[in-house]
Length: 463
Image 1 (cartoon, rainbow, N blue to C red):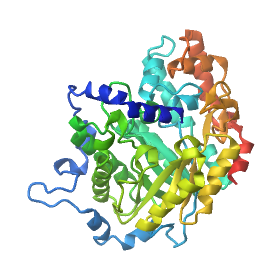
Image 2: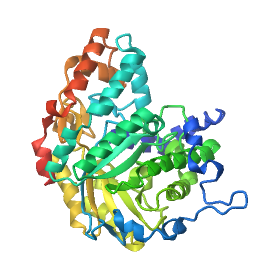
Image 3: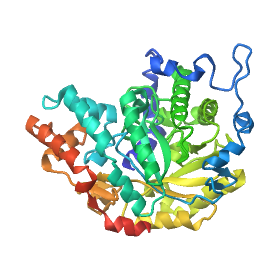
Image 4: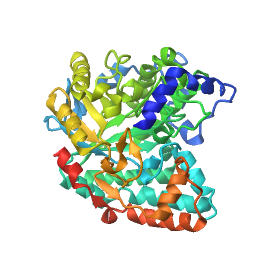
């Protein structure tokens, strides 16, 4: 996406490096009471020895009497993802982006502000205030994805959904329960679920619209808070795994969405941190859940697997993301061949966790490139639902030609003016209170499945 290219260009010139080191003096965050209750609070989660007691090793976590139990769940067998009945799972999936991690453009606005900032701006309006913004968030949690949406997902022939979520959802018992509702309904519809940590504590990249990062903040990779960030992320995943460890339709845990250790200009120095945090998270998960697959994305927005030179677990998969602007010269066949070679060399499954957001002809090319390589395990489209954006352009392509979602949300002028301002779109003036109030009310109705518009051209590009 545009902001990915922007982030990479800023890393090259080192601008982000200056910003990051300007923040070094800030005190480290402390763990919340909820996090301190997690099982590993008295043990390190990085595989080191603690108080004379050896931590669980990664290999032992699966082999310690649990290997047979894997076969009651979706699991890895060499380069294949295998269902409990022994058949290969060929993923045909769709992302449920936008619900539990707000991306302003999916609401009809811009790409400059994070979810935290977008929410703050809505809460500071006289029309909504804190209570109105909280109610708006609740409506998005509950109505962005409903039983009707998931029923249609299954009817179209998809077998998997990937659910992106902000780490703040897991910290909030009410919102965590709302996530449970989606997971439950996926099971009722016969859909596999990939749980995707789209925004980690302190953010795994500096593209705020997809990682909830804000200018001037530390990132996950900041050395001064690294141990705390690593521990927080591992404990969060242990909390998730403990909750879902016996759910057979959970395909796997997608540990970090689009990590970018090159954030803030530390390109040559931070790359070793990605396998390190993956190891920490896996150890924490395996203490409570020896059964579900862990899914590891490559560095630099799920494109670069050079630091992941060997499997980190015996029940895992790799995931790449493929967009026109992340693949050199849009040579999808060449990119797929490179990722496929990694999967075959390491004997680990590999699938595409995101592609799309382009012309339907381009999306068809991307899909066919993935499907043509039988060593890969399928794909997950970005995304199921999004606002129908007609103005502006996207990577040089008019937005009116871009397929943003299989179901499009019609938006009216009051909401358009509100979200353009709240999401930081250039030149957008602050809307009137009347527009904020009317626009927010209209949007939470428009996003309901029965009010969205099916995008037939995109469906045809997929099947």
